[in-house]
Image (cartoon, rainbow over the protein chains, first blue to last red):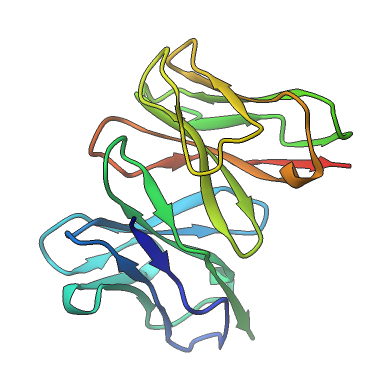
Length: 113
Length: 113
């Protein structure tokens, strides 16, 4: 079965610093890949997605992610973090029937001023 | 266009009580999902539906039942609540097979005492 690993449970960065959140997946074929963000007490909002084509995808709020097939990774990046980016970030993989997603366990981002 | 809405937002139940969570979407999506979110475990799929009148089990279906009598609504029922069902419940929808991008509701925080 497919799986998604987010190795970092909690990350703290300073405002203005760069950010990279890691995501690795386990699946034989190229899956559909997603990053969602969840602000405290809120639902999940889609940041970006990869279906095919250019391996560097741009999302909302200045985020980008790069699909690396050889590493089975889809890491999320942002060049300069803002205090409002503090949230929990989930990587997800879409495979199989019924458009189901498998989620990673999430990475909580704390931003210090 | 409200997207995906969930009712109620918060609920406290005593062990053994029953309740129904309502999910509604106004995007004419065929597929709908119920997840539970627990600390350190990401989102886990409880049940899903690929169309009006259909339901299927997800990863953690035990103790829950669902119904999809109308295309826009997806109900999640707990017949006899247990403390292990204390969680945040999210509903999501997606247009069709192969779309994978899911749209989430704001969540329901359920506490079972």
